[in-house]
Image (tube, rainbow, N blue to C red; front, top):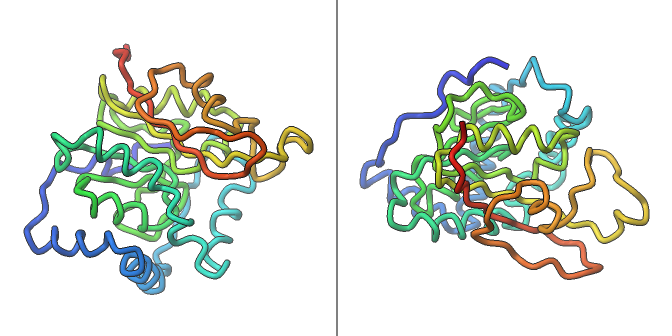
Length: 244
């Protein structure tokens, strides 16, 4: 997978007018409507990765594109990215406007706009498909992004689609700066133990504890897992070890 040409994007603090626009996007209904309207006008630009790693699940793109026709399910996703964006904004509060963030698997512009509404203006997106100038096409298994490019990498509920989640983590740590943050979202499925892993899932990761065992980095934030419940989990790790 070649290096996405525009990643990382240059560090910028937007104009006062742009900051006002982003602030308005903090309002969920406004952000969802803007994101939906932009999808309608820009979907003609939809393009996909042509050289994906074998670890990417076969149904990944079809599953995610299907959300666009599921009564707007692609937009907002029950605000689950709050589990990663709010902790990150708090952790980076002293350098919020210059923190460089990569959101992997945003699907739509909603996550990007939400991050910018929180003051995380230097947020890029990376996904296997894109219709948006805010989201580059690429594969996080082997991104080609220069090492130590980002202060934070957020995996937006995409790690379940990989048969090699360890490879994803290694690549994220490579492109993270020392002391940066790695946020991972995952859906905990209380029925998985009984019925096994079902497509589009490609691995058995199912809880914050599973993520902690995989990543093996200090935890800066985690929401607790309550047994026998199905819900969204978010964990933010601190990349405290220098990557060689």
